[in-house]
Image 1 (cartoon, rainbow, N blue to C red):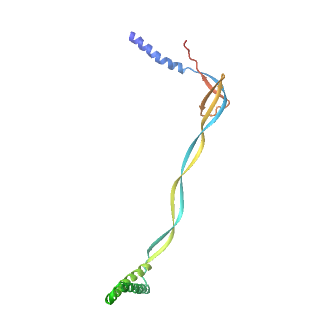
Image 2: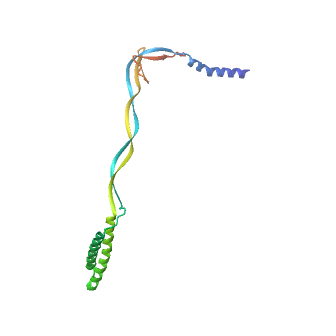
Length: 181
């Protein structure tokens, strides 16, 4: 029995402050003396697509193109002359100069023929290509986050922060609590 009464007493001591806090408080109004808005900066990000035209070079073999005989002949002739001159300049002695001239002319003619063929075989053209990229555009905006409020109640000055502008008066809650002597 003593254990039961002790438990009930303990529970009542735990519940009593909760019931006192649940009682309605007395509300009064205090005079607002000063209000200062408090700001914060908010960022808004928005994807923005930027596009531009870019000129692009393309080369490709010409369709159905056959190098003209004249172009190939000129390439072979010029290549042979240049190759022969280089071979002659490199050779030492009469025999080596003759051999160098012949070998240089043959190799130069082959290279000249191929260059003439390849140069006329390629078709070069330019075209515009649209390129795009997405960038984040950041806009910053200053918004009110609350209000620092100074108010006076019964000759005393107090400070608080509110979400909304309080106007000329602000509600204050009065609590009554016993003072022990």
